[in-house]
Length: 156
Length: 406
Image 1 (cartoon, chains in turn yellow, cyan):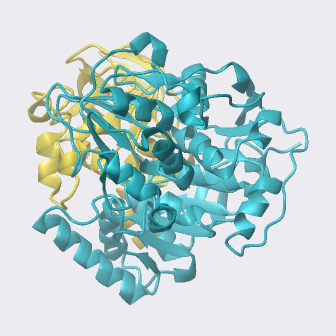
Image 2 (image 1 turned 180 degrees about the vertical axis):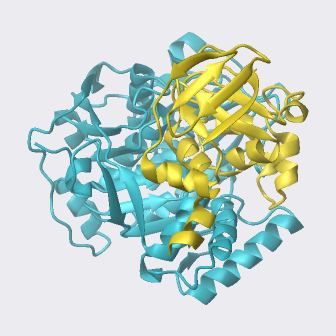
Protein backbone atom coordinates (compact mmCIF):
# COMPACT_ATOMS: atom_id res chain seq x y z
CA UNK A 1 0.00 0.00 0.00
CA UNK A 2 1.79 3.10 -1.27
CA UNK A 3 1.24 6.82 -1.09
CA UNK A 4 2.95 10.15 -1.37
CA UNK A 5 2.71 13.78 -0.34
CA UNK A 6 4.62 16.89 0.63
CA UNK A 7 6.44 16.85 3.97
CA UNK A 8 5.30 18.94 6.90
CA UNK A 9 7.74 18.75 9.81
CA UNK A 10 6.59 18.64 13.43
CA UNK A 11 8.46 18.44 16.73
CA UNK A 12 8.50 15.73 19.39
CA UNK A 13 5.79 14.96 21.95
CA UNK A 14 3.00 16.65 19.96
CA UNK A 15 0.06 15.97 22.26
CA UNK A 16 -3.55 15.36 21.28
CA UNK A 17 -4.65 18.61 22.95
CA UNK A 18 -2.50 20.49 20.43
CA UNK A 19 -3.82 18.41 17.54
CA UNK A 20 -7.43 19.14 18.48
CA UNK A 21 -8.26 21.13 21.62
CA UNK A 22 -10.81 19.92 24.17
CA UNK A 23 -13.01 22.92 23.43
CA UNK A 24 -13.81 21.52 19.97
CA UNK A 25 -14.70 17.96 20.95
CA UNK A 26 -18.42 18.23 21.59
CA UNK A 27 -19.72 17.80 18.09
CA UNK A 28 -19.88 15.20 15.36
CA UNK A 29 -18.88 17.81 12.80
CA UNK A 30 -15.69 16.44 11.25
CA UNK A 31 -15.14 19.54 9.12
CA UNK A 32 -14.96 21.60 12.31
CA UNK A 33 -12.15 19.42 13.67
CA UNK A 34 -10.28 19.76 10.37
CA UNK A 35 -10.69 23.54 10.50
CA UNK A 36 -9.22 23.75 14.01
CA UNK A 37 -6.54 21.07 13.77
CA UNK A 38 -3.20 22.18 15.30
CA UNK A 39 -4.77 25.52 16.27
CA UNK A 40 -2.73 25.70 19.48
CA UNK A 41 0.49 24.64 17.75
CA UNK A 42 0.38 26.74 14.56
CA UNK A 43 -2.94 28.30 13.52
CA UNK A 44 -1.79 28.51 9.88
CA UNK A 45 -1.27 24.74 9.59
CA UNK A 46 -4.88 23.61 9.15
CA UNK A 47 -5.24 25.21 5.73
CA UNK A 48 -1.93 23.79 4.50
CA UNK A 49 -2.42 20.09 5.23
CA UNK A 50 -4.09 18.82 2.06
CA UNK A 51 -1.89 16.22 0.37
CA UNK A 52 0.80 16.33 3.06
CA UNK A 53 2.73 13.70 4.94
CA UNK A 54 3.30 14.71 8.55
CA UNK A 55 6.79 13.91 9.73
CA UNK A 56 6.82 14.23 13.49
CA UNK A 57 9.41 13.70 16.19
CA UNK A 58 9.17 10.97 18.81
CA UNK A 59 6.04 10.20 20.85
CA UNK A 60 3.65 11.60 18.25
CA UNK A 61 0.08 11.98 19.53
CA UNK A 62 0.71 11.53 23.24
CA UNK A 63 -2.04 12.22 25.75
CA UNK A 64 -5.72 11.64 25.38
CA UNK A 65 -7.54 8.79 23.65
CA UNK A 66 -9.58 11.28 21.61
CA UNK A 67 -10.08 9.82 18.17
CA UNK A 68 -11.01 13.29 16.96
CA UNK A 69 -7.24 13.91 16.72
CA UNK A 70 -6.65 11.39 13.95
CA UNK A 71 -9.99 12.18 12.30
CA UNK A 72 -9.07 15.88 12.19
CA UNK A 73 -5.80 15.06 10.44
CA UNK A 74 -7.46 12.79 7.89
CA UNK A 75 -10.28 15.27 7.24
CA UNK A 76 -7.73 18.06 6.75
CA UNK A 77 -6.15 16.01 3.95
CA UNK A 78 -3.13 14.47 5.66
CA UNK A 79 -2.06 11.42 3.62
CA UNK A 80 0.11 9.73 6.26
CA UNK A 81 1.93 10.36 9.54
CA UNK A 82 5.52 9.27 10.01
CA UNK A 83 7.41 9.39 13.30
CA UNK A 84 10.20 7.50 15.09
CA UNK A 85 7.62 6.57 17.73
CA UNK A 86 3.92 7.11 18.40
CA UNK A 87 1.82 7.18 21.53
CA UNK A 88 0.08 3.82 21.35
CA UNK A 89 -3.55 4.99 21.42
CA UNK A 90 -2.91 7.57 18.67
CA UNK A 91 -1.24 4.85 16.57
CA UNK A 92 -4.13 2.44 17.08
CA UNK A 93 -6.69 5.15 16.39
CA UNK A 94 -4.95 6.05 13.12
CA UNK A 95 -5.07 2.42 11.97
CA UNK A 96 -8.72 2.20 13.01
CA UNK A 97 -9.77 5.13 10.85
CA UNK A 98 -7.55 4.11 7.94
CA UNK A 99 -4.90 6.83 8.27
CA UNK A 100 -1.51 5.36 7.28
CA UNK A 101 1.12 5.60 10.03
CA UNK A 102 4.73 4.44 9.77
CA UNK A 103 7.20 4.15 12.59
CA UNK A 104 10.43 5.28 10.97
CA UNK A 105 13.48 7.26 12.06
CA UNK A 106 13.92 9.66 9.16
CA UNK A 107 15.00 13.29 8.92
CA UNK A 108 12.30 15.69 7.73
CA UNK A 109 12.76 18.30 5.03
CA UNK A 110 9.90 20.80 4.90
CA UNK A 111 8.10 20.57 1.58
CA UNK A 112 10.11 17.57 0.36
CA UNK A 113 8.39 14.91 -1.74
CA UNK A 114 7.71 11.92 0.49
CA UNK A 115 6.76 8.47 -0.74
CA UNK A 116 5.96 5.52 1.48
CA UNK A 117 5.08 1.86 1.37
CA UNK A 118 3.03 0.74 4.31
CA UNK A 119 3.37 -3.02 3.76
CA UNK A 120 7.14 -2.85 3.44
CA UNK A 121 7.50 -0.12 6.04
CA UNK A 122 9.74 2.25 4.08
CA UNK A 123 9.72 6.00 3.57
CA UNK A 124 11.50 7.99 0.83
CA UNK A 125 12.30 11.67 1.32
CA UNK A 126 13.42 13.28 -1.97
CA UNK A 127 14.36 9.84 -3.24
CA UNK A 128 16.40 8.71 -0.20
CA UNK A 129 14.85 5.56 1.23
CA UNK A 130 14.66 4.76 4.92
CA UNK A 131 13.31 1.55 6.44
CA UNK A 132 10.99 1.62 9.42
CA UNK A 133 8.80 -0.94 11.16
CA UNK A 134 6.19 -2.59 8.88
CA UNK A 135 2.66 -2.86 10.27
CA UNK A 136 1.46 -6.24 11.54
CA UNK A 137 -0.62 -8.15 8.94
CA UNK A 138 -3.84 -7.40 10.84
CA UNK A 139 -3.12 -3.68 11.15
CA UNK A 140 -2.24 -3.56 7.46
CA UNK A 141 -5.49 -5.28 6.56
CA UNK A 142 -7.46 -2.75 8.62
CA UNK A 143 -5.77 0.24 6.95
CA UNK A 144 -6.23 -1.38 3.52
CA UNK A 145 -9.93 -1.77 4.19
CA UNK A 146 -10.12 1.94 5.01
CA UNK A 147 -10.39 1.47 8.77
CA UNK A 148 -11.91 -0.82 11.36
CA UNK A 149 -15.53 -0.01 10.42
CA UNK A 150 -15.24 -1.18 6.77
CA UNK A 151 -12.91 -4.00 7.89
CA UNK A 152 -15.59 -5.16 10.31
CA UNK A 153 -18.29 -5.04 7.68
CA UNK A 154 -16.15 -7.18 5.36
CA UNK A 155 -15.09 -9.74 7.97
CA UNK A 156 -17.91 -10.29 10.42
CA UNK B 1 8.61 -15.90 35.24
CA UNK B 2 5.80 -13.91 33.65
CA UNK B 3 4.92 -10.35 34.58
CA UNK B 4 1.42 -9.52 35.79
CA UNK B 5 0.49 -8.27 32.30
CA UNK B 6 1.73 -11.55 30.77
CA UNK B 7 -0.17 -13.58 33.37
CA UNK B 8 -3.45 -11.77 32.69
CA UNK B 9 -3.09 -11.80 28.89
CA UNK B 10 -1.78 -15.40 29.06
CA UNK B 11 1.01 -14.85 26.54
CA UNK B 12 4.61 -13.67 26.53
CA UNK B 13 5.57 -10.06 25.81
CA UNK B 14 5.72 -9.25 22.12
CA UNK B 15 2.96 -11.64 21.05
CA UNK B 16 -0.40 -10.54 19.71
CA UNK B 17 -3.46 -11.84 21.51
CA UNK B 18 -7.22 -11.69 21.08
CA UNK B 19 -8.87 -11.39 24.48
CA UNK B 20 -12.35 -11.17 25.92
CA UNK B 21 -12.91 -7.85 27.68
CA UNK B 22 -14.20 -8.16 31.25
CA UNK B 23 -15.11 -4.46 31.62
CA UNK B 24 -15.63 -2.09 28.70
CA UNK B 25 -15.98 1.55 29.67
CA UNK B 26 -16.85 4.65 27.66
CA UNK B 27 -17.88 8.18 28.62
CA UNK B 28 -19.85 11.04 27.13
CA UNK B 29 -16.73 12.28 25.32
CA UNK B 30 -15.67 9.12 23.52
CA UNK B 31 -19.09 7.44 23.60
CA UNK B 32 -20.50 9.68 20.88
CA UNK B 33 -17.93 8.59 18.29
CA UNK B 34 -18.05 5.00 19.51
CA UNK B 35 -21.82 4.99 19.04
CA UNK B 36 -21.45 6.41 15.53
CA UNK B 37 -18.83 3.78 14.59
CA UNK B 38 -21.00 1.05 16.15
CA UNK B 39 -23.95 2.06 13.95
CA UNK B 40 -21.76 2.29 10.85
CA UNK B 41 -20.46 -1.22 11.53
CA UNK B 42 -24.01 -2.44 11.24
CA UNK B 43 -23.69 -4.19 14.60
CA UNK B 44 -27.01 -5.43 15.92
CA UNK B 45 -26.44 -5.07 19.60
CA UNK B 46 -23.87 -4.95 22.36
CA UNK B 47 -22.45 -8.44 22.71
CA UNK B 48 -21.92 -8.33 26.47
CA UNK B 49 -24.06 -5.55 27.97
CA UNK B 50 -23.40 -6.93 31.46
CA UNK B 51 -19.70 -6.02 31.00
CA UNK B 52 -20.36 -2.63 29.41
CA UNK B 53 -20.39 0.71 31.21
CA UNK B 54 -21.21 4.20 29.99
CA UNK B 55 -20.42 7.01 32.42
CA UNK B 56 -21.18 10.69 31.83
CA UNK B 57 -18.25 12.53 33.36
CA UNK B 58 -16.48 14.75 30.83
CA UNK B 59 -19.07 17.49 30.35
CA UNK B 60 -21.47 16.79 33.15
CA UNK B 61 -23.95 18.40 33.21
CA UNK B 62 -24.07 19.46 29.56
CA UNK B 63 -22.87 22.99 28.80
CA UNK B 64 -24.56 23.71 25.47
CA UNK B 65 -27.51 22.57 23.41
CA UNK B 66 -25.15 20.63 21.13
CA UNK B 67 -23.64 18.72 24.05
CA UNK B 68 -27.08 18.08 25.52
CA UNK B 69 -28.27 16.71 22.17
CA UNK B 70 -25.30 14.34 21.87
CA UNK B 71 -25.84 13.17 25.45
CA UNK B 72 -29.53 12.59 24.80
CA UNK B 73 -28.69 10.25 21.90
CA UNK B 74 -26.20 8.33 24.04
CA UNK B 75 -28.63 8.01 26.95
CA UNK B 76 -31.20 6.57 24.60
CA UNK B 77 -28.64 4.12 23.20
CA UNK B 78 -27.58 3.04 26.71
CA UNK B 79 -31.14 2.31 27.77
CA UNK B 80 -31.94 0.49 24.55
CA UNK B 81 -28.85 -1.73 24.89
CA UNK B 82 -29.27 -2.53 28.57
CA UNK B 83 -25.70 -1.66 29.53
CA UNK B 84 -24.80 -0.11 32.88
CA UNK B 85 -25.43 3.59 32.49
CA UNK B 86 -24.14 6.15 35.01
CA UNK B 87 -25.63 9.55 34.34
CA UNK B 88 -24.20 12.96 35.30
CA UNK B 89 -23.19 13.22 38.92
CA UNK B 90 -22.13 9.56 39.21
CA UNK B 91 -18.50 10.54 38.95
CA UNK B 92 -15.43 9.95 36.82
CA UNK B 93 -15.61 6.60 35.05
CA UNK B 94 -12.31 5.36 36.53
CA UNK B 95 -13.42 6.17 40.06
CA UNK B 96 -16.86 4.62 39.55
CA UNK B 97 -15.14 1.45 38.31
CA UNK B 98 -12.78 1.56 41.31
CA UNK B 99 -15.71 1.41 43.71
CA UNK B 100 -16.18 -2.34 43.78
CA UNK B 101 -16.53 -3.13 40.08
CA UNK B 102 -13.05 -3.92 38.73
CA UNK B 103 -11.40 -7.03 40.20
CA UNK B 104 -7.87 -8.41 40.16
CA UNK B 105 -6.90 -10.31 37.01
CA UNK B 106 -9.53 -8.73 34.78
CA UNK B 107 -9.03 -7.25 31.31
CA UNK B 108 -10.41 -3.72 31.52
CA UNK B 109 -10.61 -1.55 28.42
CA UNK B 110 -11.80 2.03 28.46
CA UNK B 111 -12.25 4.63 25.76
CA UNK B 112 -10.17 6.99 27.85
CA UNK B 113 -6.41 7.16 28.22
CA UNK B 114 -6.51 7.14 32.02
CA UNK B 115 -8.13 3.70 32.17
CA UNK B 116 -4.68 2.59 33.37
CA UNK B 117 -5.80 3.89 36.80
CA UNK B 118 -7.60 0.58 37.37
CA UNK B 119 -4.36 -1.38 37.13
CA UNK B 120 -4.12 -0.54 40.83
CA UNK B 121 -6.31 -3.62 41.41
CA UNK B 122 -3.98 -5.96 39.55
CA UNK B 123 -6.13 -5.78 36.43
CA UNK B 124 -4.82 -5.25 32.90
CA UNK B 125 -6.49 -1.90 32.32
CA UNK B 126 -5.80 0.21 29.27
CA UNK B 127 -7.19 2.96 27.08
CA UNK B 128 -8.35 2.74 23.47
CA UNK B 129 -10.08 5.06 21.02
CA UNK B 130 -13.74 5.22 20.08
CA UNK B 131 -13.68 2.86 17.07
CA UNK B 132 -11.88 0.18 19.09
CA UNK B 133 -14.59 0.57 21.73
CA UNK B 134 -17.30 0.16 19.08
CA UNK B 135 -15.70 -3.11 17.99
CA UNK B 136 -15.53 -4.25 21.64
CA UNK B 137 -19.22 -3.42 22.06
CA UNK B 138 -20.00 -5.48 18.97
CA UNK B 139 -17.72 -8.46 19.65
CA UNK B 140 -16.94 -8.47 23.37
CA UNK B 141 -13.26 -8.80 22.55
CA UNK B 142 -10.22 -6.96 21.26
CA UNK B 143 -6.58 -7.52 20.33
CA UNK B 144 -3.38 -6.48 22.09
CA UNK B 145 0.31 -6.74 21.68
CA UNK B 146 1.42 -8.05 25.07
CA UNK B 147 3.68 -5.36 26.51
CA UNK B 148 7.09 -5.73 28.05
CA UNK B 149 7.16 -4.46 31.62
CA UNK B 150 9.23 -1.86 33.44
CA UNK B 151 9.38 -2.27 37.22
CA UNK B 152 9.04 0.82 39.35
CA UNK B 153 10.63 -0.34 42.57
CA UNK B 154 9.40 1.64 45.55
CA UNK B 155 11.22 1.59 48.88
CA UNK B 156 10.67 3.49 52.14
CA UNK B 157 7.56 5.35 53.23
CA UNK B 158 5.92 8.61 52.19
CA UNK B 159 6.68 11.17 54.89
CA UNK B 160 5.25 14.46 56.06
CA UNK B 161 3.47 16.44 53.38
CA UNK B 162 4.63 14.14 50.58
CA UNK B 163 1.92 12.13 48.79
CA UNK B 164 1.59 9.35 46.25
CA UNK B 165 1.12 12.18 43.71
CA UNK B 166 4.68 13.34 44.37
CA UNK B 167 5.86 9.76 43.82
CA UNK B 168 3.89 9.71 40.54
CA UNK B 169 5.51 12.95 39.38
CA UNK B 170 8.90 11.55 40.39
CA UNK B 171 8.56 8.41 38.27
CA UNK B 172 7.19 10.40 35.32
CA UNK B 173 10.28 12.63 35.59
CA UNK B 174 12.54 9.56 35.77
CA UNK B 175 10.98 7.84 32.75
CA UNK B 176 10.00 10.85 30.61
CA UNK B 177 6.85 11.34 28.54
CA UNK B 178 7.59 8.35 26.31
CA UNK B 179 9.90 6.36 28.56
CA UNK B 180 7.44 3.50 28.85
CA UNK B 181 5.83 3.74 25.42
CA UNK B 182 4.19 0.41 24.40
CA UNK B 183 5.18 -1.02 27.81
CA UNK B 184 3.51 -1.72 31.13
CA UNK B 185 4.66 -0.46 34.50
CA UNK B 186 4.58 -2.65 37.60
CA UNK B 187 4.78 -0.90 40.95
CA UNK B 188 6.62 -3.25 43.29
CA UNK B 189 8.75 -3.27 46.42
CA UNK B 190 8.17 -2.70 50.13
CA UNK B 191 7.15 0.90 49.46
CA UNK B 192 3.94 -0.03 47.68
CA UNK B 193 2.63 -2.11 50.61
CA UNK B 194 2.39 1.02 52.77
CA UNK B 195 0.44 3.01 50.17
CA UNK B 196 -3.35 2.67 50.51
CA UNK B 197 -5.58 2.07 47.47
CA UNK B 198 -6.27 5.78 46.95
CA UNK B 199 -2.55 6.42 46.49
CA UNK B 200 -2.09 3.37 44.28
CA UNK B 201 -4.86 4.61 42.00
CA UNK B 202 -2.97 7.93 41.77
CA UNK B 203 0.27 6.11 40.90
CA UNK B 204 -1.33 3.94 38.22
CA UNK B 205 -3.33 6.89 36.85
CA UNK B 206 -0.20 8.65 35.65
CA UNK B 207 1.33 5.60 33.94
CA UNK B 208 -0.01 6.81 30.59
CA UNK B 209 1.93 10.06 31.03
CA UNK B 210 5.05 7.96 30.40
CA UNK B 211 3.41 6.37 27.36
CA UNK B 212 2.69 3.14 29.27
CA UNK B 213 -0.13 0.87 28.19
CA UNK B 214 -1.01 0.33 31.82
CA UNK B 215 0.37 0.56 35.34
CA UNK B 216 -0.17 -2.38 37.65
CA UNK B 217 0.00 -3.15 41.34
CA UNK B 218 -0.28 -6.73 42.60
CA UNK B 219 -3.50 -7.19 44.55
CA UNK B 220 -2.26 -7.65 48.12
CA UNK B 221 -4.05 -7.70 51.47
CA UNK B 222 -4.74 -3.95 51.20
CA UNK B 223 -6.47 -4.39 47.82
CA UNK B 224 -8.44 -7.43 48.95
CA UNK B 225 -9.59 -5.64 52.12
CA UNK B 226 -10.53 -2.53 50.12
CA UNK B 227 -12.64 -4.61 47.73
CA UNK B 228 -14.25 -6.42 50.68
CA UNK B 229 -15.66 -3.06 51.85
CA UNK B 230 -17.69 -3.14 48.61
CA UNK B 231 -18.72 -6.73 49.21
CA UNK B 232 -16.34 -8.04 46.56
CA UNK B 233 -14.33 -11.18 47.26
CA UNK B 234 -10.94 -11.24 45.58
CA UNK B 235 -7.77 -13.27 45.76
CA UNK B 236 -4.30 -11.92 46.33
CA UNK B 237 -1.66 -11.88 43.60
CA UNK B 238 2.00 -12.47 44.40
CA UNK B 239 4.92 -11.48 42.16
CA UNK B 240 6.97 -14.49 41.10
CA UNK B 241 10.33 -13.07 39.99
CA UNK B 242 8.91 -11.49 36.81
CA UNK B 243 11.19 -10.64 33.89
CA UNK B 244 11.41 -6.88 33.49
CA UNK B 245 13.00 -5.01 30.58
CA UNK B 246 14.03 -2.21 32.90
CA UNK B 247 13.83 -1.23 36.55
CA UNK B 248 13.68 2.20 38.11
CA UNK B 249 13.95 2.75 41.85
CA UNK B 250 12.29 5.37 43.96
CA UNK B 251 13.00 5.95 47.65
CA UNK B 252 9.70 7.31 48.97
CA UNK B 253 11.35 8.50 52.22
CA UNK B 254 13.63 10.83 50.29
CA UNK B 255 10.88 12.50 48.22
CA UNK B 256 9.97 16.16 48.61
CA UNK B 257 6.87 17.96 47.24
CA UNK B 258 7.08 18.22 43.45
CA UNK B 259 5.36 20.17 40.69
CA UNK B 260 5.22 19.67 36.91
CA UNK B 261 5.67 22.90 34.96
CA UNK B 262 6.39 24.25 31.50
CA UNK B 263 3.49 22.47 29.79
CA UNK B 264 5.24 19.10 30.18
CA UNK B 265 4.24 16.39 32.64
CA UNK B 266 7.84 15.22 32.83
CA UNK B 267 9.24 18.68 33.51
CA UNK B 268 9.18 18.22 37.26
CA UNK B 269 10.67 20.61 39.78
CA UNK B 270 10.78 20.92 43.56
CA UNK B 271 7.85 22.99 44.85
CA UNK B 272 10.47 24.97 46.82
CA UNK B 273 12.01 26.15 43.53
CA UNK B 274 8.73 27.80 42.53
CA UNK B 275 7.74 29.09 45.97
CA UNK B 276 6.19 32.55 45.78
CA UNK B 277 4.97 32.24 42.21
CA UNK B 278 1.46 33.78 42.06
CA UNK B 279 -1.46 31.55 41.10
CA UNK B 280 -4.96 32.47 39.95
CA UNK B 281 -6.84 29.25 40.52
CA UNK B 282 -6.51 26.02 42.45
CA UNK B 283 -8.23 22.85 41.27
CA UNK B 284 -8.51 19.78 43.48
CA UNK B 285 -10.14 16.78 41.87
CA UNK B 286 -9.85 14.45 38.82
CA UNK B 287 -9.15 10.75 38.42
CA UNK B 288 -5.70 11.47 39.85
CA UNK B 289 -6.68 13.18 43.12
CA UNK B 290 -10.43 13.56 43.61
CA UNK B 291 -10.92 10.74 46.09
CA UNK B 292 -12.18 10.85 49.68
CA UNK B 293 -8.64 10.71 51.09
CA UNK B 294 -7.65 13.68 48.91
CA UNK B 295 -10.57 15.86 49.97
CA UNK B 296 -10.08 14.87 53.60
CA UNK B 297 -6.46 16.01 53.34
CA UNK B 298 -7.53 19.27 51.70
CA UNK B 299 -10.11 19.93 54.43
CA UNK B 300 -7.57 19.32 57.19
CA UNK B 301 -5.36 22.00 55.70
CA UNK B 302 -7.97 24.66 54.96
CA UNK B 303 -10.40 24.07 57.84
CA UNK B 304 -10.94 27.24 59.86
CA UNK B 305 -8.93 29.30 57.37
CA UNK B 306 -9.74 31.10 54.11
CA UNK B 307 -8.41 30.36 50.64
CA UNK B 308 -6.89 33.40 48.93
CA UNK B 309 -7.58 32.38 45.33
CA UNK B 310 -10.58 30.72 43.72
CA UNK B 311 -10.41 27.05 44.64
CA UNK B 312 -12.50 24.56 42.72
CA UNK B 313 -13.11 21.20 44.36
CA UNK B 314 -14.61 18.38 42.33
CA UNK B 315 -15.25 15.04 44.04
CA UNK B 316 -14.33 12.08 41.85
CA UNK B 317 -17.66 10.35 42.45
CA UNK B 318 -21.07 10.60 44.06
CA UNK B 319 -19.88 8.19 46.74
CA UNK B 320 -16.97 10.54 47.53
CA UNK B 321 -19.35 13.52 47.66
CA UNK B 322 -21.75 11.63 49.89
CA UNK B 323 -19.00 10.67 52.32
CA UNK B 324 -17.50 14.16 52.58
CA UNK B 325 -21.01 15.51 53.13
CA UNK B 326 -21.86 13.05 55.90
CA UNK B 327 -18.53 13.56 57.64
CA UNK B 328 -18.73 17.36 57.60
CA UNK B 329 -15.71 17.70 55.32
CA UNK B 330 -17.78 19.45 52.69
CA UNK B 331 -18.91 22.17 55.07
CA UNK B 332 -15.30 22.74 56.17
CA UNK B 333 -14.34 23.21 52.52
CA UNK B 334 -17.24 25.52 51.74
CA UNK B 335 -16.60 27.63 54.85
CA UNK B 336 -12.95 27.96 53.82
CA UNK B 337 -14.13 29.50 50.54
CA UNK B 338 -13.82 26.51 48.19
CA UNK B 339 -16.28 26.16 45.29
CA UNK B 340 -17.82 22.73 44.73
CA UNK B 341 -18.35 21.25 41.29
CA UNK B 342 -20.50 18.20 40.49
CA UNK B 343 -18.73 14.82 40.54
CA UNK B 344 -16.92 14.34 37.23
CA UNK B 345 -13.84 15.54 35.37
CA UNK B 346 -14.49 19.21 36.09
CA UNK B 347 -12.23 21.70 34.30
CA UNK B 348 -9.36 19.20 33.75
CA UNK B 349 -9.73 19.05 29.98
CA UNK B 350 -10.80 22.64 29.47
CA UNK B 351 -14.12 21.77 27.90
CA UNK B 352 -16.37 23.61 30.37
CA UNK B 353 -16.59 25.24 33.79
CA UNK B 354 -13.43 26.42 35.50
CA UNK B 355 -11.34 27.14 32.41
CA UNK B 356 -8.47 29.61 32.65
CA UNK B 357 -8.17 33.06 31.14
CA UNK B 358 -5.22 34.28 29.09
CA UNK B 359 -2.11 34.51 31.24
CA UNK B 360 -3.63 32.73 34.23
CA UNK B 361 -2.02 29.94 36.22
CA UNK B 362 -3.82 27.03 37.82
CA UNK B 363 -2.26 24.89 40.52
CA UNK B 364 -3.99 21.59 39.84
CA UNK B 365 -4.04 18.06 41.19
CA UNK B 366 -4.78 16.69 37.69
CA UNK B 367 -2.46 14.69 35.46
CA UNK B 368 -1.91 16.80 32.34
CA UNK B 369 -0.53 20.30 31.81
CA UNK B 370 -0.39 20.46 28.02
CA UNK B 371 -0.38 23.90 26.39
CA UNK B 372 -3.83 25.57 26.51
CA UNK B 373 -5.47 22.43 27.96
CA UNK B 374 -7.50 24.30 30.57
CA UNK B 375 -7.97 27.41 28.44
CA UNK B 376 -6.10 29.34 25.78
CA UNK B 377 -3.10 31.14 27.24
CA UNK B 378 -3.40 29.49 30.64
CA UNK B 379 -0.71 27.49 32.41
CA UNK B 380 -1.23 24.43 34.58
CA UNK B 381 1.07 23.43 37.42
CA UNK B 382 0.54 19.81 38.49
CA UNK B 383 1.01 18.99 42.14
CA UNK B 384 -0.26 17.06 45.15
CA UNK B 385 -3.33 17.91 47.22
CA UNK B 386 -1.16 19.25 50.06
CA UNK B 387 0.72 21.53 47.66
CA UNK B 388 -2.56 22.68 46.11
CA UNK B 389 -4.00 23.41 49.56
CA UNK B 390 -0.91 25.31 50.69
CA UNK B 391 -1.06 27.33 47.46
CA UNK B 392 -4.76 28.06 47.90
CA UNK B 393 -4.18 29.47 51.38
CA UNK B 394 -1.33 31.77 50.29
CA UNK B 395 -2.38 32.62 46.72
CA UNK B 396 1.05 31.57 45.55
CA UNK B 397 3.05 28.38 45.17
CA UNK B 398 3.94 27.28 48.70
CA UNK B 399 5.76 24.30 50.13
CA UNK B 400 3.18 22.45 52.26
CA UNK B 401 4.07 22.32 55.94
CA UNK B 402 4.09 18.94 57.64
CA UNK B 403 2.21 20.41 60.63
CA UNK B 404 -0.62 21.62 58.37
CA UNK B 405 -1.17 18.21 56.83
CA UNK B 406 -1.58 16.47 60.21
